[in-house]
Each structure stands twice: as structure tokens, then as C-alpha cells.
Image (cartoon, rainbow, N blue to C red; front, top):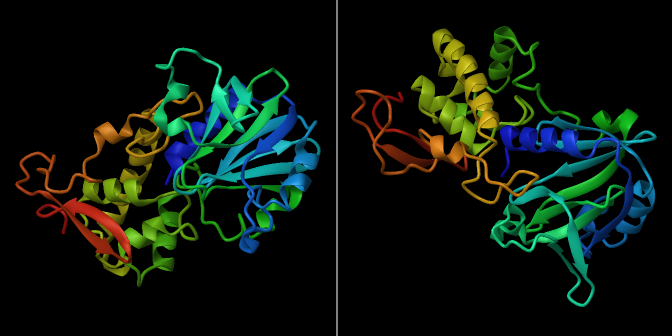
Length: 305
């Protein structure tokens, strides 16, 4: 699942490319009758409403809240996109094949990033006023796209109850300590991944944070010492910024809006390195995998305690 750095990378790309444009039309091939998602584009009854409400609207901004992308429209409407497990947004020029009912990139060069095999699962397309398109690609179709009132969106089930943003300047060490205390009986791995405690951290970056400070993912938050909390706070910010600097993590499906892979997966110290030697200087350990609180955790057998 795309985490904070991947969603932030996408949002920055959208802010650069689509702000000021208008949405001319919307297409989808999703026709789910799943009654649990009555307010999602994938719901066949909801889509006509969504299409009517966003068509002709101007894009004012693209922002991120936790793992949600928020595309603000005029007047007072916001498209919320959660990419879930395999979703990502692509920007470029596409051609619609009516016979096959699908969209493909206009680029004839098959080596172009938009032709990456992971970019072929296009299920929603926004037709933009500059002749280009914003396509939502999602192989497993778990992603969610819905429309909210901008003024009240933070009160909705989609955004209410989300914890603070870890990269915000006002998220101080003291606030971090308070958030950890809120999950003191949980394993530290699960605390870092709990969006109601801290926003946007998932499997990848929680593993990397804990590897950096030498803390086992199965330790309870209440057992973390004050000095370790200070190191964790610093490591959290460093790992997330590093993820953004490398354009996100593309070990799996994630691609940026131009269809290109991020490079953070080339710099993992723990995540999915099971059986490999620990990269910490003078450490004799190997990376092991263990299920912690129902989630996979990767950590060093020696220096993480």
C-alpha cells in the first residue's frame, strides 16, 4: 500500500500539473453493486452523481491528508482518493478504444513509463481541459474515489479521527511522546502504523524507523525508553523525508504520476530483506521476518532489542 512518501510524491506531482485545469468529463469501467461502498465511484449508482458534480469544475489545489489525496474543486467540493493496496494516479495523454472499452497511453514508444505493465489497469479517467488525462490505475480495484464538501470533509468518516501529520513542523517531540502513550499497550510496530495515532506510516517505513534505532517491532510502546523515543522521533522524520526524496517506494505497484518508479526500495535496510545480512556497521545479524499484531515485520536478529 502506498504510504505517506508515495502519496506525498503523487500529490506534489498533481499540484504541479493539474491545478488551474477543469474536469471536462469522467469515465469508469467499474460497475460494482457492492452496497458497502455506496459513496464510491466504483458503485454504479453513485458514479452518475459524481460525474455530474465534478464535470466542468476547476481544480484549485491538490493536497494530502495521511494516505488520502484531496483534489479541491470550485466551489466547495473535494475529490478524495485513497489508493489502498495497488492504486496510483497517472497523468498524460490517453486514447480511448470504444470497442475494447479501455484507455491506453498515446505514446507509441512502448518503453515510455506510462506503458509500464503496472500502469495498464486503468479503471477511472478524468478528461482534463488541456487535452490530457488523469487516470486511476488499480490492479486489485480496492481504491476509493469519492466526493466531499470541502468545508465539512474533516468531519466525515474518511478523515475524522486521523492522527497528526508526522512531518508537520508543529508535531514536536512532546506531541510524539503523547501519541505513543495513547497506544502504550500495543506493540510499537502497530502503534507507528495506527493512523489514529500518527498519520501515514505503514509497513515499509515502520520497519525502517525501528531498524534505524535498534528497537524490536514486538516491544510494547510502554516499554520504550525516553532516549529511544527521541531517536525514534528523529528516525521517523528522516525515513519519511528520505522516502519522498527518492520518489517513493516501487517494490510493488506504486508509480508516480508520470508512470515512473520511485527508488526508495533500493535503499531498504530492513523491509523485505529477509535472510540478508544486516547493513548496520559491525553488526553480525541477519534480517528476519515475523508477524507482529497481524502485520509482517522485518528486523535485525542482533542489534534490534
